[in-house]
Image (cartoon, rainbow, N blue to C red):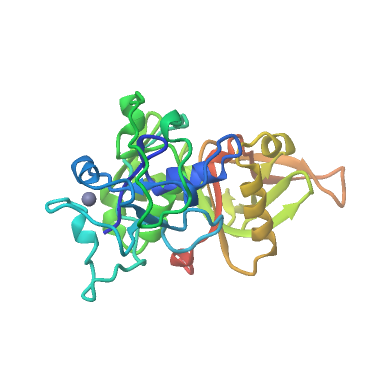
Length: 319
Ligand SMILES: [Zn+2]
């Protein structure tokens, strides 16, 4: 079991680990999870202890990860009796928490509008040092109003969260068929919402995914070719995504994105691409060798990098 959420002192709100990652990489937001205080999401439990009683994070800051990101108890973390998160502490026989395991908290909805955060001015200066003898920071006083949709624990605006649910639970087909996911007006099980790229013609508006064959670096822009082809009238067609310079330059997580894609280009690992928001369509493009001729390709321009991920996913190999 992992924490679904943790209370973030300076933002005076509960965040998922995916919110934390999103904030860490957001260049428009001053946020560094290593300097933040995360505490038990159970309000009663949290208020029973000082602000020095904190949680740790796993994979909050690494752009590329394989192990499922999460919050965890650190050796000094305490919970009150009856706190539903108390059992996390002794989840293994040795009383040592395991850092492995799948994402168990399936968001039921991916919100397409980004979550907004308001930093609590009272706790803007959170000391980085979390020594035991340090005086506790004054608890956050100001209440920030969050619209219900944004703070609902089973909703997320971070695409990486449902993707991690799908990837880490890939072997558990029954679970993926059971869990519902809503995006916009469309609701389907995780199993149906995630569509292999070769079957993209089955339905529009899904989350498409597939193994990457090649990433072409045009310096300012990128092209991604998938390994599997889409078939139409017994003919195979390459599936390609384009990522434009303007899109990348204006992205609030530009640095992290460039790190992610450059790492992908140099990587020897098998990589997968997940995207939502566009459905590649058959287009005729001019041939490079012979500009008079054209050939067909299923292609799309990515319009929102928030709904685009390149990552390792060993769980999906050879499937
Ligand atoms: Zn607790």
